[in-house]
Length: 262
Image (cartoon, rainbow, N blue to C red; front, side, top):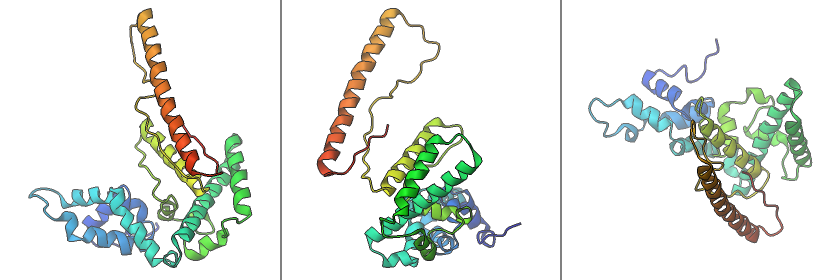
């Protein structure tokens, strides 16, 4: 049985809070993030200060460890203890983009080996291989291994470093929740485009499109016509909003490509 640095933690309540925290349990896979970020952060008295009598300090720490922006401290701590600290913001961005594309390529290569039905994945893999092969960002994969952003065998790279490669574009996936999967997919696409140098913008639609399904509805012909008319009106408003967003992006992107993902 493999023993991790977290298993060796003598404070049981602290260990439980890290194991049950949404983001802490991912970041704990990296020893430096664990010892220099997570443990000092969760041991800080401010986390459990003013806890009411009878309230669980463990529950408070778990909530803190499940808050993305609090756990961002651990990632930034790792960067400032790593060779990345010596890089400029632009260089760090290029390296993190490269590490994300490296993990993406590795995952697609594994999918390619294990399945014959990966047409879209094959095309994406070809694009990633082509773009990274010319080293247009000024780096090779070797730079990732030297600076500690990945291991040569990506299967042995901790989830903490893969989280770092996502550069904050993450969402928690709840089981049997289709909406949370959509959020994860949107975050993944956001990071993928950003890793290729695209500028990302969001348009929040005001209505569900297509409209939510209404079960066991009894509708007359007039009801149906009215709903279709309403859908068309709402759809036109939303499309107009998207077009305004695209025009705004085009005005600030010079000759760069603008992509719309729905």
